[in-house]
Amino acid sequence: MAQCAAKTKDGTLCQVPTREGQKYCHIHRRERFFSITLSTSAIGLFLLGVLGFVANITGVLGYIGINPPYKFNSTATAVNFETPTLTVSPTPSFTPVPVSFPMSLVNIKIVDTGNTGQICGYSKVHSVVRDLDGSLHVFYVTSSEPTIVFESISNDSGATWTTGEQIAGFVVEGKSLGLTCAAALDPNGNIHLFFDLTASDIGYTIWSPTSGWKRPVIRGQGLPDVGNFAVNLATGPDNQVHAVWSSKKLWYTFFDGKGWSPELEVAPGGWHPDIFIDSNNVRHVVFNDASFIPDKSGDGSSFVTVNYTYSSDGEHWSAAKMVPPDDGKWKGDATIKVDSTGRRHITYIEWAQLEGDIYYTFSDDGEAWAQPEKLNIDPGVVTGNDGNESAAMLLDQNDNLYVIWQSLQVNNIPGGRLVLRWLNKSTQQWSEPVEVAKIGGGIGNQPSMPYQVFGWKDRNNFVLDVVWTNDGKIYYGQIKFQAVP
Image 1: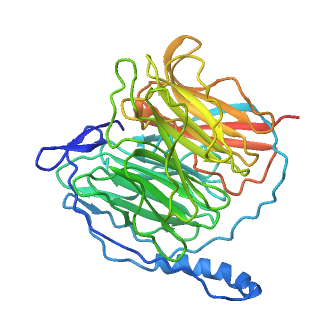
Image 2: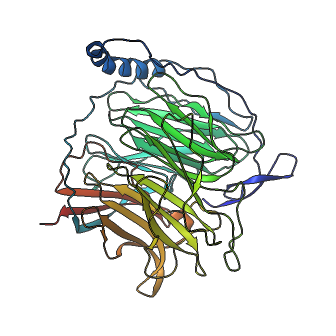
Image 3: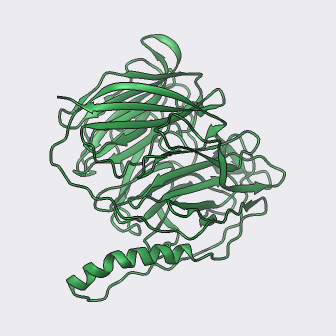
């Protein structure tokens, strides 16, 4: 969903982009604060250990039972989908193994899901989830109902898919505004979904294996006359839920098991953020450091580049630092993952004559970064004009990193392709580029992978789940890997 300059209700220019060429960005700001209850009682270690799990469950259930009053702007109201109360599943156990196994490709299987529309999150945003039972969930919108989120499920490893059903969204009077969404699984097996329109607040809902989908509520707002865009979602080891989004500034909120934080400022200016929560519950965010869309025509000269920041508590953020090099070329579309050793993996796209080139870099401390390495061999990585078309990335249980992006040609043969490369942790070697699928090309055909795969315990085998849209149809790709002997 491409971005463009937006206008306020009286016709003057906004300072941030909106989706799909929409010209309406007026919303009413409502200040909302949610208390964050932190336990500081000096309870003995044994008693604290006994009560910790109970407190976490009680907090989640307490939240689910709360339906605070909320109000959308004048153009949008929430669709009401009621389901029973959430039940929290047991946290899966993990056995840490200090050895990382390199993986080799076994095969790629492509399936037409039978659903038509457009996945509502792509690239760094996640439209597909693999739950703890191995079922796959894909989220999308349709051309006839572009403000409603649909869900299709596969219970047989992607071989067959259900017809999509409505789970959340907005009812919009008189306008057809594009909707985006972000979905992620938590370690307890619940699926969290954020969704938003350009001229709306950000909606949130949750699914549990026993109770289904909960009624949507509002969990994020933007600045007056600006609106929201590029909401992204993450879950962490403490079953917290995190969201980051753009509204001229970068904003963040999280649910700590007891209540939602107020909207917290991550950076005074920026857009298209990505977020990842590491094993120590540290929040890592990358973003573009501008409150407007830069012009990438000509020679690509631009002061806009990729920035990185982090926070241990969500309230206090480090000073944002540029991810080098600082060579005066436009850089954006950044995506971040953090492995079990704390290494920050980042991919980004740099301006080039034919769209862009995709680069990879890493840092073990967030201060010093490795020399960037170009991943695309053929020229032409699709970027559009605004920096929302990043690569999709995922870490497996062995800390191997998988990257998929949309290329304009492969082996000097023109035509849209989804291209895969993976970095083996133990050897620190990248695979050769592998073609996943041929596609029509364009911004809407970007791939999406899960935020993270919880509960996968087979260290000798791994399945990479990827979804995308092509010619109005939604496809699923199952990419199988096995450990190198």
